[in-house]
Each structure stands twice: as C-alpha cells, then as structure tokens.
Length: 386
Ligand SMILES: *Cc1c(COP(=O)(O)O)cnc(C)c1O
Image 1 (tube, rainbow, N blue to C red):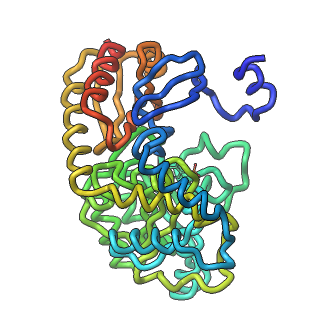
Image 2 (spheres, protein in one colour):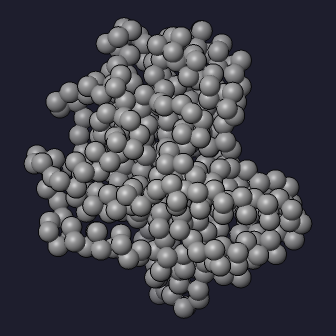
C-alpha cells in the first residue's frame, strides 16, 4: 500500500490533501518522495519562518533536545523565560502565557478578556465582537469566535457570547458596541483563511477609539500574521496601534508547535495561580527554536520582506489572468480568472507549491527566501495564471 492509500485508511478524513508526499527540504526547496523538487511558497501555512531544516534553527533545537526535552510547568525553565522576555521587549507587552497552537493561544486570550471584564464591569459583561469572515481556530470556543458559518454547522451549540461584525464596517461596529455589553473586540489585521484581506486603517482606528471610549479590551489574533509575516514583527504594527492582548503561534515556533498569548499592562495580572495551564505549553525545545527565530527577525530581514513583497505584487498585478493581489508583506492573495485550484495544480506540476485561501491563490514564502528562487517561483505562477 502506498502512503496515499494508507492515509485514507487510517487518518480521519478531515483534510483534502494535495497529491504529493513531502519527504525532505532545505530552505525554500522541498522534495517529494519521488524526488521531485519544489520551490515552497507556502511554508506549511506560514509556519516554517526560515524554510525547511534551517541550519541555525536546527542547531538551537538540537542543543536543547540534547539537554532535556520537557520539564512540565512545575519547574522553572530557561528557554521559555528567555522567549517571554524577548516577546515583551520587542513589543512593549508585559507577560506571556505559552501553549501549543493558535486555537489555544486564542482560548487563553478569551479567558483573560472574560475575567477582566467580569471583575471590572460585572459578570454580564462577557460579549466579544469578532469579524465576519475571520478565522480563530477549531475548538468549540474559537469556532464560536470564527465568523464563518461553514465552520459552525454540525457542531452546535457553540460557546455563547460572540457577535460578528462585518470587517471594515465602522458604522456596524459602532452600533454593536453601543447595543451590547462588550468585553473585547478581536481581529486579524489581515484575515488569512478568509481570503488574505487586510483591514483598513480607518477600521482598526475605529476599533481602538471605541475600545478607549467604552473600556473594551482589544485582542489581535496574530497567529498567521505574526512573527514578521506582514513585513513588521506583528501586523498591528502596520497600523500604529497596540492591542491589550495578542495571540500568536504558526511562525513563532518555526516548525514546532508553540502558541503564545501576550498580555499588555492592563491585563498582565488578570490570570492568577491555577486559572489556566498547559502540560506542553512553553516546551523547552519549541521555545529554544523560537528564541532563535525571533532573534533573527530584524529590520534588515523585514525590509527584505517588504521589497520582495513589492516585487511579487508588481509582477502579479500586471500579469495576464490576474484580477487582483491583496495582502501585506509575505502574506499575499491572488485573485485569478481561472479557478484557484487549477492555478495551484499547474504551479505544483511546474515545481512551485502554493495554497488556497477562499477563491484566491495564497502565497506565504519563507522570510529569507533567496531572490533567485522567488523570481523563478513568480514566473511559474504568472504562467499558471494565463
Ligand atoms: C491558523 C490560525 C488559527 C488556528 O491555529 P491552530 O494552530 O491551527 O490552532 C487561529 N487564528 C488564525 C488567524 C489562524 O490563521
């Protein structure tokens, strides 16, 4: 039996996989089990920040692996403290709770918001406004936060207390805030799964104005947009705002499971002893890798991301068969005249891996993708769009 047959026999049928099995990789190149080479423009959905088996990251992870793999949170551990210090110093935030995924990072953010609002504004202040077309995770509560009915059906009832507002509709947001007892507003600065749609500056400013006026917490879901992806360390930095809480995961670990809920001064002491926990959260190996990843996301790298992003946007916007290009930095969505799945299949046949977001072709290359590979990949994508 080959991999594909065994997979359909033994793996729950939740994923529509592309018809290849990736076996190894190096930087922005990946190889399947037939030995075919691909330029990877998707990085395992914005996870492999510096590509496959990046030498420095592998060294950081291996060194920790040889020291000790896990301690539990009953003991102090240096890698997670180091990572928390870096996250706080780079963002001006105060404290971090570590978990293992984006959904968990959001769950923690929601718990913090509920506890803060209940203590400050009373127990019936628990509503959280999230945006239509958002994606916040697959647990029952983060599904409730996710503003897309397609993910909800079959799993009702979901956790109570979420209201969905149309993204970039300032008027609707104002109305919802006025009419409800709102604890927090949660947003992705660029909606990833929703189709790579950036929020407008006006809308983000409205969120923060309303938050100030009504004493509402702001939560930025930086699970996909974070860790350099949009050309800034975190996507909210593109808007000149600072949320009370942000969650991140995906690219933070560079390929190992790691989530972080990062708390600002208003909420740094909301969670107390026993309020929350995670067996694996802050795992030393994942954190040692993440310390290496974060230490390398500097101005020079981010400027490179922005320059290369402009190159991709210019080339693709002018390309035949391309209707529009959306997104920020290395989080881009291409709306094509052809069906996106067709374009993706054509790219794969010609040695370039890209993925889908709604009706768009989504690009999430490694932050350090070499120029020559990027140029090659863009040419392949352009050909596939024709
Ligand atoms: C991927 C994603 C999540 C969920 O992350 P998991 O690690 O799959 O739980 C949450 N929010 C956003 C914005 C995401 O892109």
